[in-house]
Amino acid sequence: MEKILVVQTAFLGDAILTLPMIQKLFELFKDSKIDVLAIPSTAEIFSASPYINEVIIYDKKKEKSLSYLFLLSNSLKHKKYSRIYSPHRSFRTSLLVMNTNVKETYGFSNSSFKYVYKNVIKYMPGHHEIQRNFDLIGFNYRNDEWKIPPIMKFNQSAKNKVDIFISNLKSNDKFIALAPGSIWNTKIYPLEYFEEVIKYLSMKSYNVILIGSEQESTVCKEIASKYNNVISAAGIFTILESIYLLKKTKLLICNDSAPTHMGLCAEVPVLTLYCSTSPHFGFYPYTNNSFYLSYDNLNCKPCGIHGKIKCPLKTFECGYKLDPGVVISKIEEILND
Image (cartoon, rainbow, N blue to C red; front, top):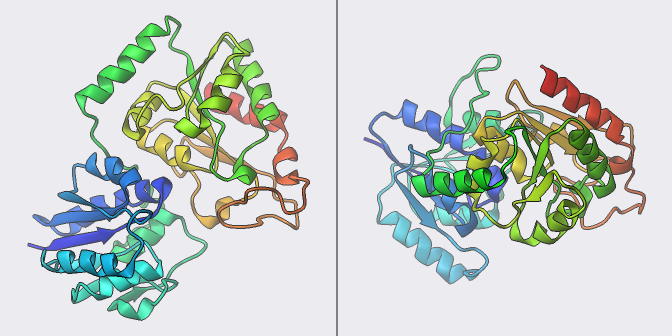
């Protein structure tokens, strides 16, 4: 029996895209126990996976010292892991893995201090993150075999909370989810364009549920206050509850941000709108019923892999050139399919 540790201390989207890798690891190593080292904000996601034995919390924001890092790695050493896979590529992660003294370690070729890893796997920039993670564990896929949705289980309390919310809306079941926010401003499709989309959905008698974090609740409430068919659920639900809520919808429209991957967990069609970033980074919605739109005829795009606080050129053409009419046409195509 293998005892395996997966180190993924990145943010929510990266955490979700690690789940299919863990699912395949479980298949490759029958009767194995798979633990995950994660940050507090993604622990809920990993805890919902039926393939994970234990989630170990590493609060990087709170515990920043090297002394704590070595204390953590010593505690991991006592767990006697036979293998460590690290999709996360930071220098801090490499130090952590090095100090565990585990013999079979796997990391990417673009990891900081990659020489720590016994097995260095080539990082393929043009591939999807799911494919790259499968490369890390040695799962050989053909064609579209890598397009595996993340699997998670929902507890009854999460289901009940969402079901009560939906029943209180007292409206038809034509729900569209829209996630207008992001922590990076240049990833946010112009809000006035989002409102054009909402007007179209209103005309088609759809009810729009706005989702987002507690920090995004103000803007979501402001949008919802303008329309009879729009309600804000931002800040109301946990991540797991939000994913279950998405299961009740016919489509999710969002920016290049974590909701894209939450929609994949919910197995609903996703339409992701790219502004300053690019789908070529490998984080696009990959299921057959999902799509993305991006205006790419710009020399300045992409201006960064994560987006920025504000447009460096102060024009934000990557957002404004993606016409809401194009978005609406794609929505019509998806809903009429």
